[in-house]
Image (cartoon, one colour):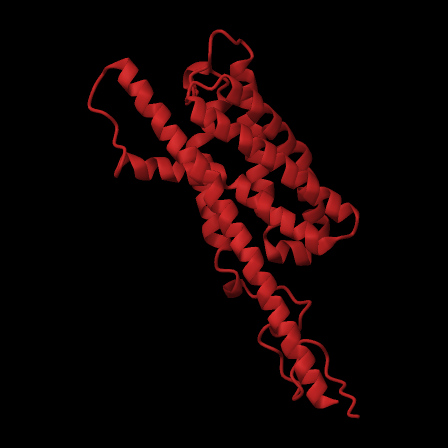
Length: 259
């Protein structure tokens, strides 16, 4: 039997395995192996810059969603939903940043706690309240309520997994939570696409017609806004798992050949 002394992540000749980078499997991935990090940060930054300032004035007149005068609590809860949702988006991006997770695990853990406690939980719960009185129509209300429940659920399961030391399952649930966090960005992009394609704004000043158009647009953007990212996340998890199993089988075969 031949005993090899090759370090994991290096080839028998002593060269680094390209799957793990130059320094082995524990080294942070090179930036070019994570080309989505920069675009993700840019998209989130633009989204926040365009949508958040209007709620920092704490003036109901600046709100994109008209507050319901029948419910005095609507606007304050909406502001809580938006601001804590901002915390969730920012900390979620930190959570999925591979270099930060590997080089600064303390920051990763802190951002994870903030993501759940100061982001998902208050934003999800306030989202349920906002959905109840939303002027955007029944379809939007149901979609927002569904997203809020799933969002809270995936984050809490992910938190439970990491507390139990089940890191692989924790990461899977956080991928799902990340997809739901990004749903607000996707739905806004879909709304803009609809404006220039299948559902342009009506050329009328009739209030009833404008309201009907807004409700239809909101409903059509809301559902695929969270369903599509979640489907992509599940596909990625399946493909990633299949790839890992394939690499493990190859490693076992190579080890059997060497013995």
